[in-house]
Each structure stands twice: as structure tokens, then as C-alpha cells.
Amino acid sequence: MLYYIFRLNNEAEMTARQGSIWRSGVFIWGLTWFLSYVGVRAVVEHPGTTSTTWLVIVVLLPVIPAALFLFYFITGMKELDELQRRIQLEALAFAYPLALLMLITLGLLEFVVKLNPDDWSYRHVWHYLVLFYLLGIILAKRRYA
Image (tube, rainbow, N blue to C red; front, side, top):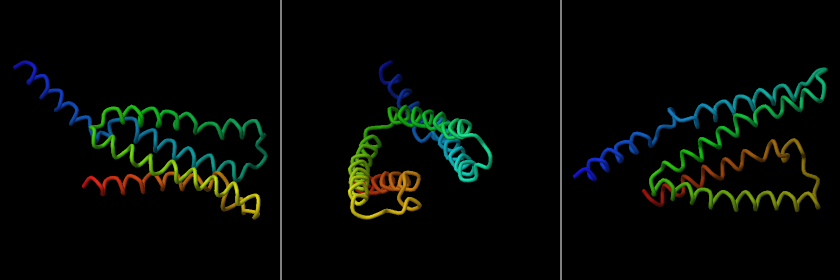
């Protein structure tokens, strides 16, 4: 009897934890990372008379909230149920090879064609990685809906 009470209590606790993006650090640190990235881009694109040393320090500042976002994201993945883990795994299994294909193709194209760095540099291409991941989530959720 105590086993079932503990199990029900544990299931209720797990259900309360699921979907708690607002209570976890994922949302806060993700938003902090995004805002710091936008701020750093604004500073770096118009550096003025700032020294290179300070610009390097400023550019590295978003690494801290990015690392905390990834920590809370990975920790949150451990709290998901099996179906949600499967969806996340399939989204990553879709996004990673697609991102690798895109980067390899861009790398090979640079041998033949001069790619415009204002369109195809690292600071422009990373958006596609997020897009591939979100597309993978949409496809995986459709499969299990």
C-alpha cells in the first residue's frame, strides 16, 4: 500500500515538474543568452574607439548565460517522460545531420564560389541550426500525435 502511495505522490510530483519551463532556468537563461547576444552584436557592429581586448571580453560575455541555458536544458531533459525524450531525440537526430550537411556543403561551395560573408558567415548560419531542431520537433510530434 505504501508503495502505491509513494508512486502516486512521485507521479504527481513528476507531472508538476513537467512543463515547468517558467520555473526552471531554461527560459530565464535562454532569454538572457538571447538578449546578451543581441547586445553584443550591437556593440561589436559599432565598436567606436574600444580596444580589441575589451571587445574580446564583451564577445565572450554571452558564453556564461549560454552555458547555464544548456545546463538547465539538459537537466530538464532528464525530467521528461519517455515520449518527450523520444521526441527530443528524434528532433536532434533530424537536426544534426541536416546541419552537418549544410556546413559541409557551404564549406565545399567556398572552394568554387566566393560566398558573401554578409550572408553565409557563422553569425548568419547558426539560425538555421535552431530552425532544423524546431522542424525536427514538429515532425516528431506529428508522428506521435
